[in-house]
Image (cartoon, rainbow, N blue to C red):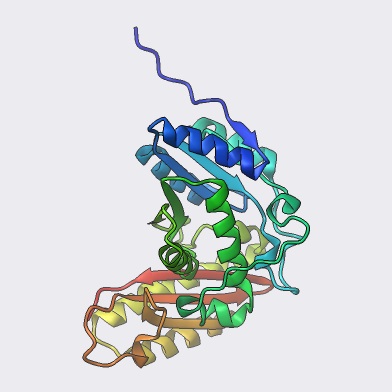
Length: 294
């Protein structure tokens, strides 16, 4: 009688060089290695990335590292949820082979003096509202991909600009790991799953789905041929009316992040996408939605 295979034992590794050696040995043995970089506080969105990775690869590593260099001085690094034991418990039945959980000192050793700077898709939006954020993101992902030289790395679509920045960096630096961007996982009311959703009060949580509704409405208006600037203005006004402070709500080229309103009218081949960041109380939420080309 055939018995279902039990998940492999979960190995927790904290040393970057030892982690690299584990992955390199697996690759030399002919295995396809998948990698899911996270900051922990795992939820169903992360589960979907792990499931995609385990479905396409022979061995999977998940990193859990809250990266200090991508947080600004007034942001939530100190209170960012850290649930390491629960995260490992969540990963064990999913078929993950390794959890890479380095210390800050291991990732940024004494004398650390190098940062990766990405221009282009990093210049606007989050790059403008959070100066230095993408330098921190690009630097830590470069370090993680050095420590976990996987065949494929899996990112969530919810952080669209971040994914665009990482893909640009990987292409520019000739990194061998393929960057795979996976669909956003949502709550029943449409709110994108995020580790920061726990910060919402009960009242705020009830209003938070207005972001997804604004994406739905924006998509409808786009399909009807309404101009981008008109759609954007309507969305910002709608969100403001229910208590959101809108940092941005814009329709952009999904690769360059340039607003479509700034592109030549005859420019073909543009894949448009709505991107938005809104504040509700003390919580900042982001989301996006792809649109059909015009």
